Image 1 (tube, rainbow, N blue to C red):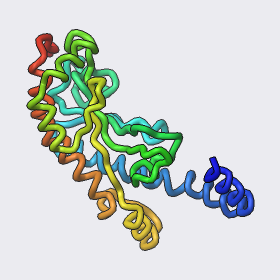
Image 2 (tube, rainbow, N blue to C red):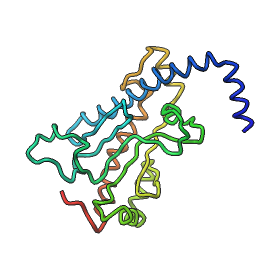
Image 3 (cartoon, rainbow, N blue to C red):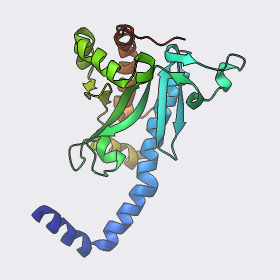
Image 4 (tube, rainbow, N blue to C red):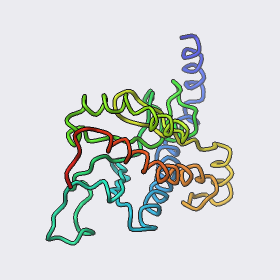
Length: 221
């Protein structure tokens, strides 16, 4: 409480500077960072034929999945023309955060959230494809080999059937990149952790496949 009181006092004393900084951060820096991360994910999905996704920067909605996780889609329509959101998947992966406190995405990606929150990729399984959410959670609890493998890859078991892979960006590297060019690009070195996380997700797909295949109720394609 004392810390918040002191922070409030300092902010009011420097209100003009704080306001200018907050507006600039919200209008320029945060969108630029999120756009670069989105471009990394889009590039990952478009680099081969095994992945597809939905990317909506304005609504902060980013989803992807292997095509093999499709349960059904419109047979008579070219697959590329069918909206990702109109298709059913056994599971999807999306950019998300945990333990946030209304923090900025940038703070969560850099590990400086006010309550220790993190940003990264969340795997969310469609419980209906496996007999319901509770059935899926029971299946996850019993899948010790897969849980161990996912933990080694860096995934955090959320205890609700979902798995979270944190992405940690370096604030100094972001600052250096912005100072040099005044913009972000998906190929910048500061976004290597995002690219590494996507490769990690690709490596984890066979593990998730084994986990889903271990469930007694399976999705029918």
